[in-house]
Image (cartoon, rainbow, N blue to C red; front, side, top):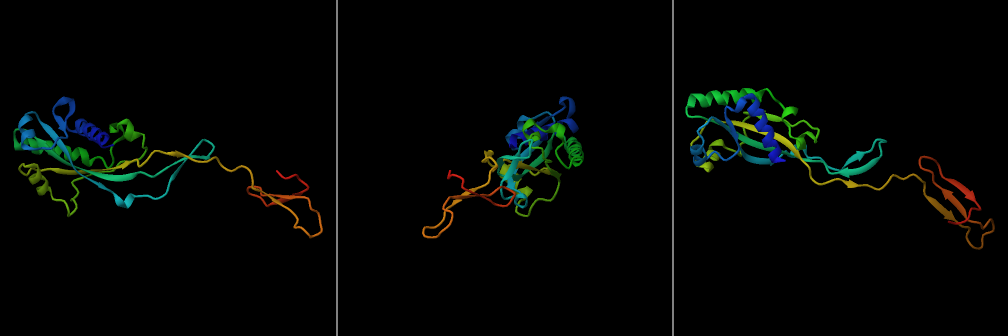
Length: 219
C-alpha cells in the first residue's frame, strides 16, 4: 500500500507544482550523493516514519452482505497508519528552491484528503477518504534535525507531510448460511407413567413460539 501512496503523492505534486515535465518527484533518501546526481529541479518526498494511528483501531469483524442483505462473508477491519514524508526542494539556487517549496506548500494545503483523481486503483477500491496534513508540528519524539543528521546532509527547509492510510489486515472469510428452520426436539413419556406413549415432537419456529405435534414418527 505504501507504493500506491507514493504514486498518489507524485500525481498531486506533478499536477500542482511541476507540470509538463519541468522537474522530478523523487522518493530516495536526500543524501549528499543523491543531491550531487540531480541537476534538474526536483521535489524530494522522503518517507522517514511509519506509525499506526492507534486511535482509529477497531475491534470485531465487519460483515459483507449480498444484494438481499444476507451476511455472506466477514473480514477484519483495516489498521490505519501514518506515513510521514519529508518534502524538500532541490535546484541550483536557494531562491528557486524557496519558490518551488512555496508552490508545493500551496498545492498541498488545498487538499485535506488525497484527491480521487490522484488515487491508484488499489486506493480507490478502499472507498474511504485518505487524510493529508502538511506542516503540522511533528511529535516530540521526532526531530527534523536528527533526521538530517542521520542522512549525513545539511539542514534544509522542508515540509512535513503526513498521509493516513488504511492497511487491510487479512483476507475475508466465508460464513455459514443463515438458519432457515427451527430446532426440533422429540419428547417421550417416562416408563411407569400412564398416558399416551407416542413421541411428541416440539418444533421451534424461527421468530415464533414452539409448537407440539403428537403422534409424529421420530426422525
